[in-house]
Image (cartoon, rainbow, N blue to C red):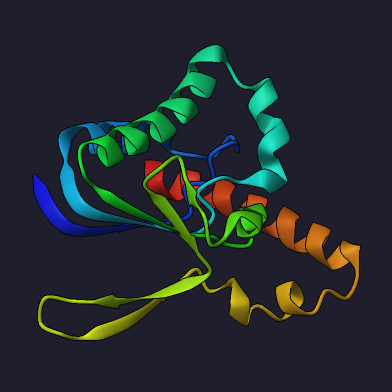
Length: 158
């Protein structure tokens, strides 16, 4: 299928929970004029998990990046809006990475009908992200997040 604008977020490449195989299949079968990667595309918090994955799973994560780059070579405009798990990307703000990918903390999107939308990941509204209190709060939140993801796996299976 062909799309004007596609918005994807929370892929969490580098983590065991990433659905890279499904995303690769979708990216392979679709075209778009603009692609908005809206935060947590790469999960730097869990990136060490990638070293305990099988070679096939690691390759699948890399293929997502390769497919996105392939889309840029075909003319897709890619906007990367970083989130809290890939916040390291802000260091490259103001530069185009890999040629055609622009980096932003937030940006405006104007629909075909002229409506204007603010596109951001949303971590800017998280009190603990904005005002870190102690490291144990991050660890507790991270553990709860992992538990919820596990419940979600079971829920999706059912």
